[in-house]
Each structure stands twice: as structure tokens, then as C-alpha cells.
Length: 92
Image 1: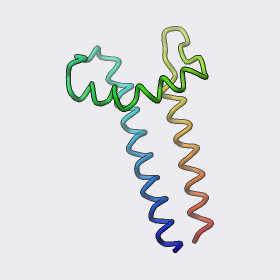
Image 2: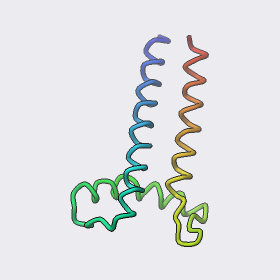
Image 3: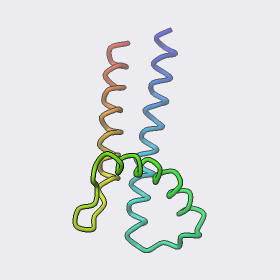
């Protein structure tokens, strides 16, 4: 039973890592004025903007024209990843 739970938690960790990279790529793309009709840009916007909007609802994230919502999201995801790793370590 522990092996299945550990596998599921490791898969969740993998998804978190992938999403962190998606957030980083989306943040970097905003620096170069991307074409909003590009399918990749639209995909990145659709997958990150709902989470950013949720964060912005509770925390003001615009400081001097710089949006720190991606940084807050990455920190939250890293925190969740640490929790999952601690759970995995206790299950071994």
C-alpha cells in the first residue's frame, strides 16, 4: 500500500515541477511582447492566468509595474513540493 501511495505522491511532485516550468516560461515570454494569437502563448495564458487571478484576489501583486504573482505561485508550489517530499520520506 505504501508503494502505491509513494508512487502517487511522486507523480504529483512531477506535475508540480512541470507546472513550475510552465510558470517560468510564461513569465519569460511576457518580456518579449508575444503574439497573443500564437497557440503556445494562448496555452500558457490559459493554464497560468486562472491561478494568477486567484492569487491576485487575495494578495496585491503589482509593485511598480512588476507582477509578482508568478513568484508567489512558484513559492507556494515549492512549499507543497517540500510537504510531499516529507510525507514520502516518512513512508519509507
